[in-house]
Image (cartoon, rainbow, N blue to C red; front, side, top):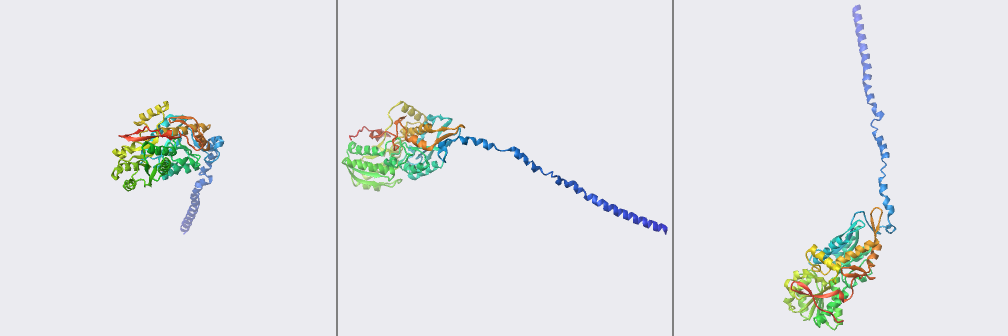
Length: 451
């Protein structure tokens, strides 16, 4: 019995000890997470290394701000200057017709400007370049191109526009944007009378071209009656009106003054109206496409032997191509080529070498386009300010004054001096001549009016 009691007590003791041992082991095991208490050590506190950002002091931009302090006083106001970064080109815009049946005028001007860019060379480490845009020869097209250039802060000035309607549509936009323009060929009389400070041209106006055309009709063709048509454009209608006035003053009778819709392919109705008046001659104020249709249809309405005369808007190879054999005997007034000189000889040689044809073949304004670009280049050189970092600053107001103030510049077309209205070319009848289609080319006629 003792043994039973003893072994019972012993078993109980062993059981108690096991329980105690189990309880002690459990807390020890759960203590292990304290090892993972490392987060309290903030080992992941690496972000505090953000202190290196304080060391990184990214103040480099302050260094590049230095040149701003060197900006000329003339450029302090917004948009007061065109800024050309070191090494960047000086950009000049060009607006003219580059498509359609008058595209030869634009093509010719671009050809001339390519030579001008090469001859202009570099200025203070900057080359010159031009941005050619198609204005379609229209007022709306001119306004669209002008808005494009006005929105481009890199455009310094504009050569153009070529046609009077496009120039008229563009001029108020350029005035607001302070972009000076030099037109090689926009001849409408009142373009220089609108009070624009930005407008200039190197070609005489239609005041003289219209006068010459009317005197040729009355004196050269000995016409007593004249029928006049025009395309309604600022150029065409303006030139037609000047011819009307001078012909009437010279004692002639204008039997019709009719407008047509440009862009059509059949003008037989308008020509029939004119034919009914049996005029001694017909004058058309307008451009190549419509004149070519007249040339093709005049014979069918009984006007085949009646002389047709137009202005410089039809001069060039494109009219002869479009009218074909019907172009023979058609007359036009147009700007005369410059007098022979060393400058002209050099330009002519370059033009033919680069473009495979003589200047003046596509339009009469090859030389005038070249001079328009070079006059602007010269004005830029007069007013530009060079910054310490090579930036070129071109004050807009000063450039407008410099272009208008051009005096005694020796160009391919002769000496160029602008008056207070931007008339910079030769004035008087001497700037224009009379041409006729003979075979497949325009031939200057020997005509000197008696005034």
